[in-house]
Length: 282
Ligand code: C2E
Ligand code: MG
Ligand code: MG
Ligand code: MG
Image (tube, rainbow, N blue to C red; front, top):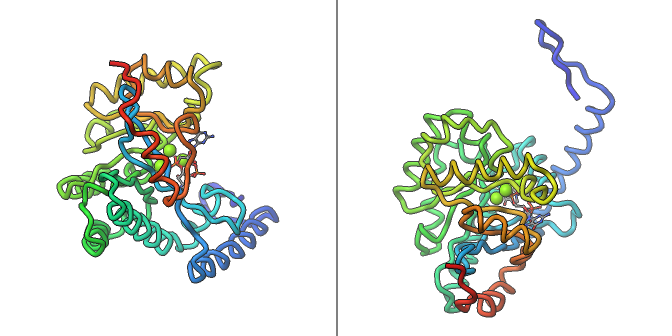
């Protein structure tokens, strides 16, 4: 790790940092190759309405089978090495392509939510670029949604507000992802033009045995409801957790209990099996 040395503020390098930089540059090289060789693909994980069990949207999640780690790690490298722009473009165009494929297969429009990194979101032409990508694929703007982390929006709140406004004016919904793990300024949250917040899975995973996680989750749900936001819980792995969240007023569910992230080509049949108007909890 680089350490800040007081007032002089210069950094010195430790072996651990050196090793990380080397690993990083190796992964970065592999990312460049992978982009050229079409080694990435997307998985899709449905979000369902807690009351009706119907599919509300799906989240696109990046996969790189050859690399062997999940996106958390290589996305971090892509962000640190400036490659995230190219990955983000690939993800967005793949999601748009999938959307028009599903529509060609006769599926109703199920919005695809795409994770967008802070640096992509801050790019000057982000909104125009997004719009032109959507137009190029001849899909409706409301069939694409954006997921952002608190870090992405809190860095320059006024700028973020204006970008969020223009996205929503074009018909795109915006979610604040991993909610509760970032800066979490409640004051800012009320100013942000958002559609939904996603309760981070770290809280959801601890719901059954940790009082604090239950308290935080209930507070987030109450806050979201007060601000008229849709509330999603991610990482739901069991029926009791699903029931608990439903009872406490959470709107939507995402997690292995509902469906694991799956290939776009497998989603259509999963959807047809799942989305009959099943049990209703009204
Ligand atoms: P995220 O956006 O919060 O995505 C949700 C993560 O939770 C996904 O991890 C998903 O597979 C996982 N998940 C869903 N349900 C469950 C469950 O029931 N139990 C458990 N244990 N996990 C569950 P994944 O796919 O490994 O992605 C990790 C993170 O990488 C994402 O977190 C997102 O921040 C980032 N990411 C993924 N794809 C992209 C992308 O295309 N672009 C960018 N910028 N980031 C991405
Ligand atoms: Mg997400
Ligand atoms: Mg999340
Ligand atoms: Mg995450």
